Length: 247
Image 1 (cartoon, one colour):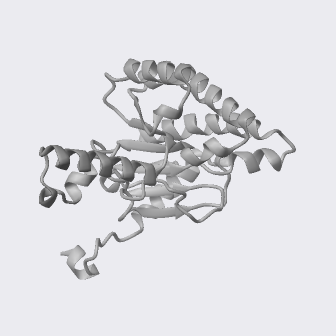
Image 2: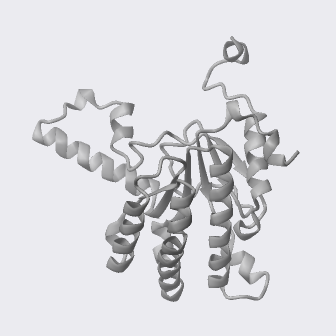
């Protein structure tokens, strides 16, 4: 029996989010340029997408490029933009073959036109797929997302289409970039750091958190399965007592 076969398919997290950390440090530990770590990280994306689809995860969100990443050296940012586009175009036929739908969240106004145009085509090409939804967080930050939602709601109130008293958690959630996506049940972070780094701050209010020392390029299918098994060993109470949950 493989490790994946030990998963309880009746207790799967519906949505898994991943902070893919450690590409640069992986490369540095091997005396390679940082961009080599990002290239190897793309191979891990393929493997983790495959296993997530195989075991029945509905949504997989990957923190691909944060708004803070724009502050990195220009050569690295340019290399990342090109790598992301080329990798997605290369993987699109396999995504379609495996019935994986691609979508993205984030502030695309800062991204190069060539990247936006080619990514939109890949998203359109997989729009008919009905299996796993692969969500790429590109030029994304949770604070930007919340501020953007507040601005749009404030405008709606000013125009009289929304009443201030009618704004509640559901209304705010529906105005986020993830408005049509369920909140993550599980958040995985690789690379040894134990912080959230401005990722899905609203959505992970009740997510289970899983941290691993492994750099993203070293994160295997079995590592992903182990994170799912760890999730299944936990009791999710959402503020209730254990006795209430059991009832």
